[in-house]
Amino acid sequence: MDKPIRREGEGFVVDVAPRTVELIEGLCDEMETLLGTDSPLLERLFPPPYGDDVERNEGYAALAGPELIDQRVEALRTVREVLRTKRVGEDQMLAWMRSINDMRLVLGTMLGVTDDEDPAPTEANEQAFGVYEFLGVLLEFTVSALSDDP
Image (cartoon, rainbow, N blue to C red):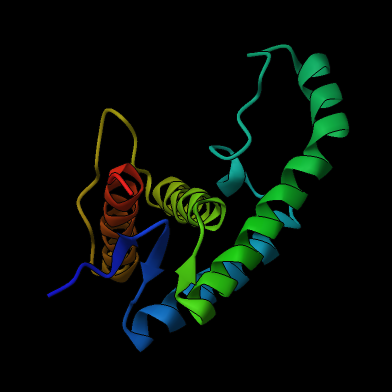
């Protein structure tokens, strides 16, 4: 059986199940909405570049923030395109990888996952943990496909 994300020739194929398409499209919608807010769930996507220097961080956010958000929204559009076309080039595959990773980072923040600790799922967040782990598998397939020689 073929991998759901794989290199074929000079391009890539993303052939995921319809339920996966629905899940990822829903996550894209949620991410796009979240990117329009100042939610603390976005902290890992936009870490403060100047440590504890509030003034410099705010200046950076004012200057670079809108462009960084626009780049992420555009990458989410690319993910939706990938789900429709199933055959894509390397640029689209890289945007896919960044967006899947961003979704995973936001979910990890929501679930309290850190480098030091992976909290145990509870009944209340079991589904979110499942999605978090599933995104990790998709990311692994993506990295593997990108690292395969054409």
